[in-house]
Amino acid sequence: MRPARSTRRARTWAAAAGIALLAGSLAACGGDSEDTASAGADGSASVAGDELATAMKALDAYPVPTEKLDGVDSVAGKTLFYIPITKQAPMFTTTEKALAVAAKTVGLRLQVCDGKGTPTDIGGCINQATDAKAAAIIADSVPYALAANGFDAAQKAGIPVVISNQVPDPAHPASKTLTWVPVPGTEQQIRLFDWIASDSKGKANILVNQSSDGPSPAAYVADGKAALKKSCPDCKLTINKVTSSNFALVPSSTSAVLLKDPTIDYVDAQFEQYLQPTQGGVQQTSRTDIKVVTGSASLGGLKALKSGSLAAVTAQAAAFQGWVNTDAALRLILGKAVPEYNIPTRLFTKDNIDDVKLTEEAELSGEWFGPATFTDDFKSLWGVA
Image 1: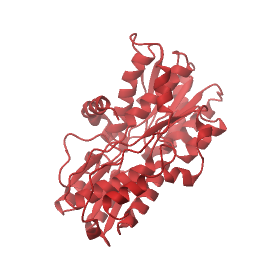
Image 2 (image 1 turned 90 degrees about the vertical axis):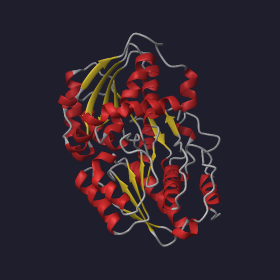
Image 3 (image 1 turned 180 degrees about the horizontal axis):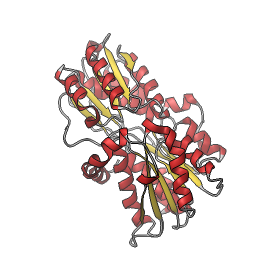
Image 4 (image 1 turned 45 degrees about the vertical axis):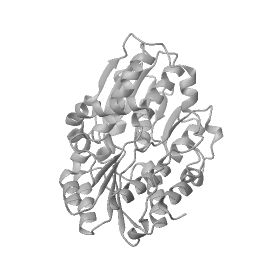
């Protein structure tokens, strides 16, 4: 993740937080939430080919931390809580499975609680972890402000909290009991827009079904929009806000926007959890000329790309993230400094999808993104190799 992009996301957080947090987790999605903007007149007509080529390649090595961790044997028998904002997102299933393996490696028990996309359920999960005197809580894609009372109470009780898949909240900086594991959501959004700009030869009209589950998704799209203005000055972008707490409205809101503007020719389901209802909305219009893309894709998304029902996808190394989250939790539990982490991403299209094995085993191994040796590297760091 480039430092400049991390800084840009941090700046965007505050602007996005006020409008996205409550509307994101509680409001219904619908056509009245769309926001249309044309890209600016500066910049090149399309991104350089080598940018896309780099985004489509696997890494030579995973960015595993180098700081060794002593005393890991002291956590054996304790419980680690994993709270994804919603288990509807396929990516979280991969992270959960990797977490289970990583936790077992050091003798931790993993307890999973589904946030179900609502503040009530998320708060209940955090309270359950606190009452159980968990060793640590890993909250995935949960904005701090969405469950501030629960997070505050957990830390007051001496339970460290890892918040993953979120832009760090400046109101709640990292501390001895809190750390953030940001992921390159901006990177994924920019790469999808890069591909669309190139594929359309700089003339795309794009609809983004943007998640309103907290401020981070809006920040990613805002950064992508800024990049699109430079890479594709003649492209047009329309934003339709959707939420995991009300999937039922996604198809109708999608079709409403498409019927209102029949010139839209690309549809981006920001995260794969919104892909099926987004495609349902496209189908309601009876249009077959629209190219659909998605981000944070899992095995299902890559298979859809292979079959031709998707034009491009981005994905992040969700299995690696499970081990990173465990590493962060262990360091907080043991009172050690938490390093800066980098979660790899990759762009997949018809040009490189044949290079990967489309199996659950391959997804869980992390081989889509680089050599599947990071698990041994973490074990060595923890002294359990």
